[in-house]
Image 1: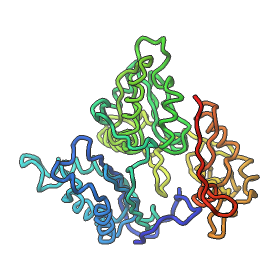
Image 2: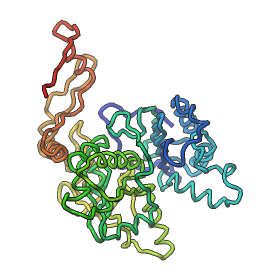
Image 3: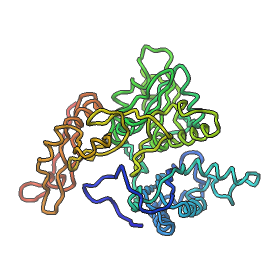
Image 4: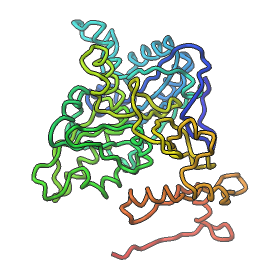
Length: 434
């Protein structure tokens, strides 16, 4: 097991070749301490220093020979790890007896005496959401970091005023709710995720799929395009809003922020807002069980296509799922993932096997930008690559045509802007006229 971050200029892989030679498991789980079931009060002092929790996962990662991504903060944790079946079981056992899992009742010793081991195992599966995979899906690397948020919403210091305003539905209930007459499905994921898979309601059609590239753009999309969620002001009966994401974590804060923001607007009324508990991952697991029991068929699934995952598997889905996306190059039906070959771009694309060797790029402009000078300072830090035409078009849609945000500026450029030609710091103050 290696412990390091991806090298500069490298992004996560969307395909892999297994070299470990044994079946394995991938876990996807998270927790917000303030959400129900809450972390018991006696353990709250432990959350002040999240580095201790990070070290716990580093240690367990070494002992259990795991790879993956671990993000911990004062508000909770967001974790996806992979390993052998034996290693994963050891890791789960260690986690369930740790203080950070208190209140979840996942430890056999802490469970209610009348419960069977099968019931505890069911809760564990529901929480950890195991799926087939192996250490290779994270290239054998365990990346453990302490962060300000377990998933960055882009709203400084935001915490829901109440966690009860938005109701989390079990997969079976979410499925049934999608069949109601007045519903609006909203995908909280990035556009390259929803491109290969999304929910479809038999009564209201495909989910709304925001053109966001990262989760921190979600609040701005809600501000600019809230009417796509609530409907027109003239509508008397507002739709019930059904939201979902990969494993549930982005909906936890993102959808509650949306509910609070819309509630402040006296001119905008909305129906009840729901989220899918455990996300698409939990829904697919439930659907697989329904199919295995003969209660449903694959055609009954309301999630169409594949579920994008942030590891080298690229995506997961029900066996025999038909693609809902097309090859970026030739247009043939495909859900095979690749990336724009232009250096520094990293845009995830759908590329069929026949086009993989064709140096597929997100757009022709991206090829031209390959020749733009990105040379940095003496320390070797590079300038950010300018946005290509297809990304500018997406940004204009996101920002309602008002502006196109430039790529994030590297730290060396920020420092350089704050100095005059002699290297002295500048005190620049701006007054905004109302």
